[in-house]
Length: 295
Ligand code: PMP
Image 1 (cartoon, rainbow, N blue to C red):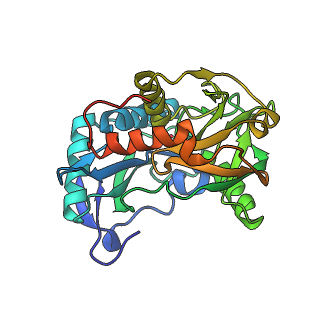
Image 2 (cartoon, rainbow, N blue to C red):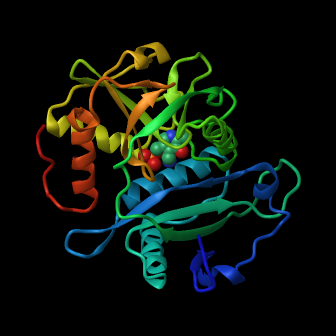
């Protein structure tokens, strides 16, 4: 993620990652009390660096901080500008961007008077998504939204993601799929899920998931491409009887599945609706086309 030359943004300053310090007594360090974002930048078809949907991400960062009662005083433009500067300082175009808002030293559970903000960036492959995933139905469920603000991107929630991902990988799978507390399909550890059945797409509704920015982009693309999408709760059984499936997320982009719980999908990924969306998403983020193509 970093080397001796890496620059990060910390509380208004551009500093060397190797020289940046945080307080080990931070409430964030001990209790996972922090909020973050995952953003992507791309080298566009014309060679420029473009952050994809920065306002959507920085607005969600603010909403996440508000949901967690964390003081937040940064503007979208200020942060977008700082992000372009950090990318430039590190000579990065195809990058992953990680803003994190964290708390000062505080071993109690009380509110804080201020928050700190860092933005870190690291290189990403131009576009992933060509390989297919073997996905395992996780034994872990997503957190109960009555105990967490599940729509917020809070660091502590990701202990659940780490456990699910580690379990899947230890059993020889590529990734996990988690259910909600009622046993309905919810999402992956860091991505939303769609599946295809009889020429239509299905995805779980907002409520027990992080409603992703990529998910919203996929819904927009489907609208433009004339692909019908139904948002409803469904079980692992419905998923097993489906034609194809994919994850979508800022880091995952649009990535197809090969199998679920060891059962391969009937449809070839290249013939699926997901593949068409994957190509349209790639064209959109790299600004290769101005209008999404129709299916
Ligand atoms: N669900 C979870 C649990 C995630 O961590 C992410 C990644 N932020 C997503 C879904 C996808 O969200 P987005 O498309 O905004 O990256």
